[in-house]
Amino acid sequence: MILDSIRVPLSRLTLVDEEQLLDQLDLVRLNLPTAFQEATEIVIHKEEVLIDAEQYAQEIIASAEQRAAQILDEISIIRQAEGEAQRIRQQVQHECEAMQQQTLADIDQIRRRAQQELEDMQRLALVECEEIQRGADDYADRVLQDMENRLTEMMRVIRNGRQQVQANPPSTRTPQQDGYAANRLPPSGGRY
Image (cartoon, rainbow, N blue to C red; front, side):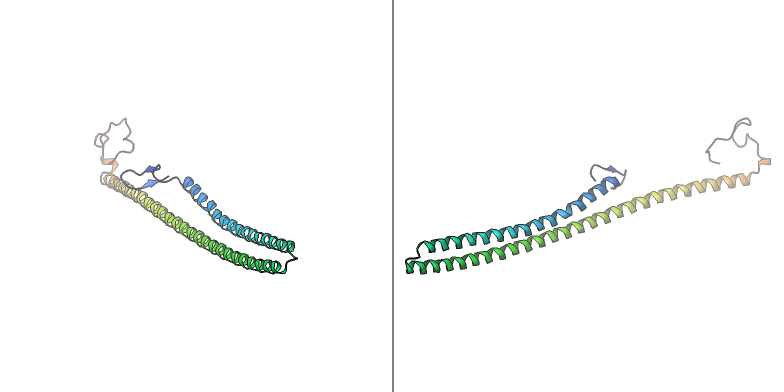
């Protein structure tokens, strides 16, 4: 947008379309909530992972219990199956806890990264706004300085004209002395 904007002649300044700039800032503001929405989706997925792990554990436990029921007549096998079921329960519980801790760590890391990106975007937007404000102030100062110089020049011309008129009262001047014919009006906008 800056590269395509009109450049101020003889300067490094560029005139930026205010409405287009504000539209771009609105886009930045509207896209910020997506970072928060992504973090929310990660939290939702955490719940899904925990539910899947719990379901997986339930399936393993159900499978172990079914296997143990089939061999009830052999005590050694039943004891072995119960031990296996207990081992599987513990293993699944450890796996679930590890998955839960990993998921929480991932969520925390993503949240911190999203927060950092948000802060970086806010800092960048503030810096850009300050640069734009400084550029606008500099441009306004130059325009006002130019207007002041022109008004000073106009005041000087007016003072010179008044001094010349006051130095030569109308009764002592003839139209030929003023540099124009008697039947013509003085030139408009001319200097004395």
